[in-house]
Length: 494
Length: 101
Image (cartoon, rainbow over all chains, first blue to last red):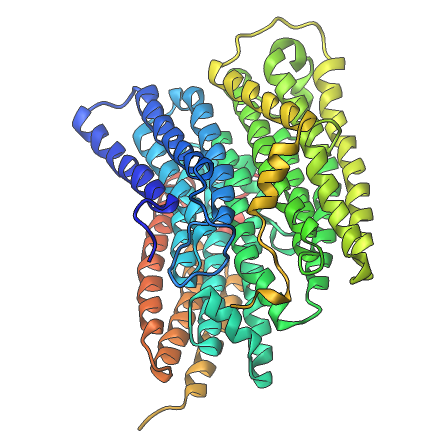
C-alpha cells in the first residue's frame, strides 16, 4: 500500500482541491476580472506542491527509481524528477499568464484547467499501472484541448485546438488499443506484470507484442512530436495562446517521454529485439526534419515549434541507447529538465512580445534588443542553451546524451552515428538561432524602449540564473539526475 | 452458443481498420470524430472480450474507464466544433487554413 503522505497523493490533494475550487470561488464572487487574484492562488498551490516534492527529497522519503510496484502509483525518484520539471513549467505558465490573461475573459477557468492538466502530467510520471497511466494521460490532455482553443473569438486559436484535438484523440485511441492488446497477451495491466509477461511470452504471440509496442510508440509519439506524427505540432503551437504553448512544449511533451521510459523502453529490453534501431532512426529523422524545417520559418512561434520537434529527437537518442548505456538515459532525463526550462523560457518571452508588441513575424522583430532588452536577453540565453553552447546548462545535457551514444558503440554499431547526427544538428540549429539574434540586435533603426511586463521579467531572471548557474556548476543537478535515473538492463525483471 | 476469442479480435481489428480509413478519407470534422470513437470502441471490445477469457475482470474495469474518458473527450471536441461552426458556418477540415508554414 502507498502511504497517505506520499508525494503524488499530496500533489493531487493540493492541486486538485485548488483547481476544483477556483471556478466555485469565481461563481461566488460574481465577477469577471481580477485575473491576478486567481493567478496568485494558482501560483501558491504550485509553489506548495513543488515545495513538498523538494521536502520529500531532502528528507530522503523517496525510494530510488523503482519502475515497478504492485500499486497503481509509486512514490519514487523518477516520478519526483518529472514532477519537479512539470511543476516548474506550470509555474512559468502561471507567472507568464499574469500579464497575458489581463486582456482575456474567464481567468478562473483558465487557471483551473492549468492545474488539472498539471495533475495529469505529474501522475503520468508516477503511474505504474496501464489503467492509471491512461487516466492520467487523458487528465493531462483534455484540459489542454480546451486551453488551446481558449480565445474563443480568434479563428487561429480555434483552428489550432481542432487540429490538436483530432490528433490528440487519435493518439489516445491508439494508446488504449495498445493497452487492450497488452492486457490480452499478458493478462494484467500492472506494468511490472506486463514486463514479466513480455519476458516469458509464447513465441506465437510475439507479433502481437510488437504491435502493442508499436502502438505505444505511435500514441506517445504524437504528444512528443516524433517525426512521422508531428504534423499537428507547428500549427497548434503557432495558433494557441503563447502561454499555453509553454505548457504544451515543455510539459505535456515530457509526460510522453516519462510514459515511454516506463513502458516502451523496458518492453523492448525484455522482448530482446533489435528494436532500439527503430528508435534510433526515429531520433535521427526527428532531429533532422525539425531543424531543416525550422530554417525556413518566418514566424518566431513556428520556428520554436520546429526546434521543439528537433529536441524531441535529441532526447530520443538517450532512450534508443538505454539498454546498453545508462549514461544515455541520464542524459535524456537531464535534457528533459533543461528543455523544460529553456523552452518554457523561450515561449514565455514570446508571450511577453505578443502582449506588448503584438508581433511574432521575424521581420518585425528588428531592433527588439533595444525595445525590450531584458526579454531579448532571456530569449538569447535560452536560444544559446537550446543550441548547446557552453557554459550554459544545455551543453552538459547534450554532452551526456552524445557521450551515452558513444558509450553504447561497443554493443550497437550504429550508436556513434546518433552522436554525429546530434552534433551536426546542433550546429545547424545554431544557424537559425543566430538568425533570430541578428534580427534582434543588429538590424532595425534605433527604436524607443517599451515597458516590459514584470511577470515575464521574473521568469527570465529565474531561468537565466538556472541556466547560467547550473551551466557553470552542474554537479548538484548531475547527482540528482543520477539518483533519479532507473537502471534499465536485462537484470531488472521483477 | 459461445463465440471464440479470435472472432471478437477479428471484429475489433476490422473496426480499427474502419476507424483509420475514416480518419484518412473523410474531411468533415464530426465524421473524423466518429472515426476516432470507432477506434476507441474497437479497443473496448478487445478489452471486454479478453476480460471474459481471463480469470479476473480487469478488462471490464479498463473498458468502463475508457468509455467514461472517451465521453469526456467527445464533450470537449463537440464544444470546439460548435465554436468553429459559429465562426466559419462550416466544419470541413479543408477550410481551416489560417495556419500555414
